[in-house]
Image (cartoon, rainbow, N blue to C red; front, side, top):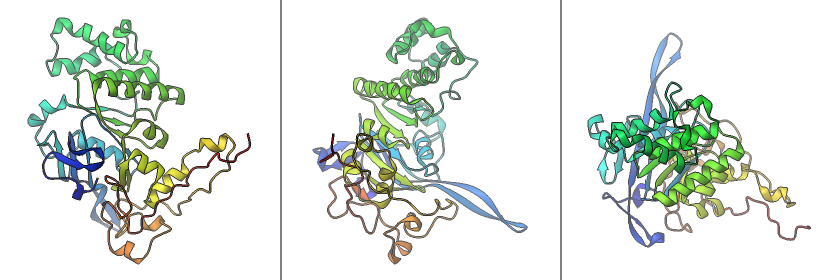
Length: 362
C-alpha cells in the first residue's frame, strides 16, 4: 500500500474490505542504510548500502502479508526492522498505534511479547547447549507469564500444539530433524502469545515434504490463534498458499502490492510479471503447452549505486527516458482495483503467464 493510502492515524481505509480497518502494524517510508567504505585508489570514499530505501505497508490483525523478491532485495532486513532487531535509519514503524521506530530498549521490552520472529535456519536459531524445555520456557520466564511450577506443563502444551511429542521436552536440538527444529522455533515464538509474527523464510532450509507440513501447521495456528504474519519468502507458491496480500520488493523498494488474486492473476509491474513467469508451471506437467518465459537481461544493480529513477529500469523491457529521470510513486493506477498499488510509469495487466489446459488432449 502506498503512503497515500495510509492515514496518519492507526486506521487504514481499505474499500475492498468494507471500509476502514484497524492496522496492527504500519510502516511508512522505512529506510535502512549501512555505511561502507569504497576504495578508489589510495583514498576511501564513504558510501551507503541502501538495503531498505523507503518501504511502506500495513498489516491488519489476523492478516498475512507476503514480502517476495530476489535475494538481496531487502526482505529480511525489513522483517528485522519491523521487530526492532535493527535500528532504522529513518521512517516510521507503528505497532498498535504506538511509534516504535526509534524507541529505546526499555520502551520496547513490553512490546517484545506481541512481536515474535521465526528465523530462517532451524539449525542455527536454537542453542545447541539448551534443552527444548529451556529454549521454550525462557520467554515465559523473561515476561513472567507462567509460574515456575507450571512452566513445564506449558512447554509440553506448546510442543503438542506444534505437533511434537511432549515427552521430548528434555532433548537437545541435535536430536531432532530440520522440520522438528523449526517446529520448536515456532513453539518458542508462540510461547508469549504474540499478535504479530515475522516469519523469515521459515521453510526455505527444509525438504519439500517437510515444507508442506510446516506451512500447514502455520496456517492452522493462524486460524486458531488469529495471528498476523509478515511472511518473508522467495517461493511464490508458498506465498500464494499462505498470504492474503503480497508486496513485491526489488533493490530496497516495493514495486507492487495488492491482494493475492491481484498479484498472481493480474500483475501490472514488469518485475512482478518476470517473477511469476519464472515460477514452475504445473499445467505444463499435465500436458499444456508452456508459455514463453520472460527473461531479464543483466544483473541486479549494486545497492550502493542504485539506478536513477526507477530501480528496475536497467532490466526492464518497457523502460523509456522518463524511467531514468523520475522515480515512479507506489500508487493505485488506472484500471487497478482498490488496494492494488504499482510503482511503474507504464503498468500493464498481464494475465497469460501460466499455461492453460483448455483444448489440451488427455
